[in-house]
Image 1 (cartoon, rainbow, N blue to C red):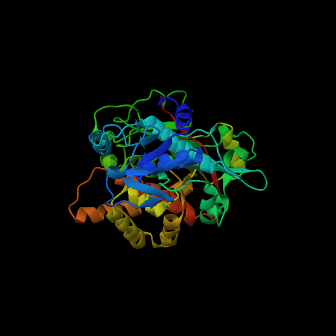
Image 2 (cartoon, one colour):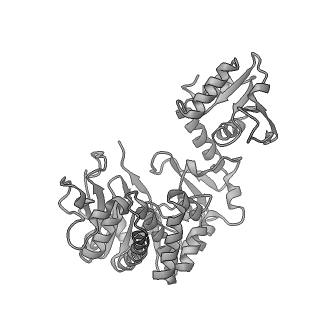
Image 3 (cartoon, rainbow, N blue to C red):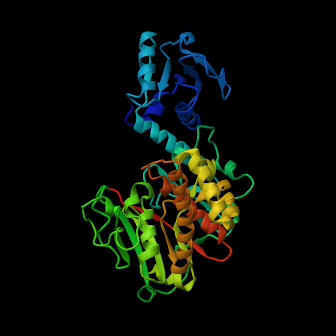
Length: 431
């Protein structure tokens, strides 16, 4: 029964179903059951302290007041061996509560993902299962009046527990494409652009960053295009050599890789890479989906920047950004923009209130745009670094990588009226 979600749901027919817990993780279970037409009688909780008396019109019952019978069942979704699981398990045994089903984590994850997908698959919105995306993420599409589709990436975990019926309610005032283009300008879908094949006459160097500490999937170096240039990042921190080109040559910040992550490659590219028509960055596992024949489309349509599917975060970029780093990082970041790049202040504000962002520091740009973008990046992040140095703080937690990621979106917003930005898939290489 617990190996197949459909069989599990069927087993609940004609049962009096209760969900253990009234907030957070158990809500996803309730929401999934509701969408599947399973009637839920209420919520059982360890104590009334800190819990509501009802949720979505259903009673919240402290365990000491729960009265079970042979036809009732409690569903517990806390992760196995976690503190909540252990305490609830022991309490139910102590209280001699019968008929309890402990939902395994893979089944819980399937419930969450399926309920989010069901809520997206409505009307002009759809889930695109055929497009590449990494684990625990998906792609949703919006189809406009002309039948053209526009695509965005999202992580299931970003949908905070709430009643998920129809994701169209998230776009009650503007369609996804209108909201997106108001922030970033026109959305050019790479594969829909027309163009001749000019791969051989366009000069391009797309660097692929990988560190000695990164797990070797055995996939990154297979069948590399001649315009992909592997570069070892953090090379100053090890004697191990994985690529001939390393980020510790020339003018570099290789020794700062622990905080800057792939941005040590961006710095090396800014200071040392030969001039070319297009320059860009991939990761060893996450790569931008550009084929040889796409370069003709890029050139014929005078595309300035290519990035992967923008990520949608319902809570907004500012709140998402603040969940990745300490609040003082955000405060210092905002101060640094005001001090060293004040012309980007409005774009910074627009980025923080927007609900879409270009993810993972993966992109391709015309060389002159990259040079301008990189100057913004390191003007800002070096100022933030100086603020912490003045305080005597020593860190090694990749925080600069997150700040750099935000600056890509800010740079695109600032220049949206002058550049053409095209979007394509992100290829995730994983065994």
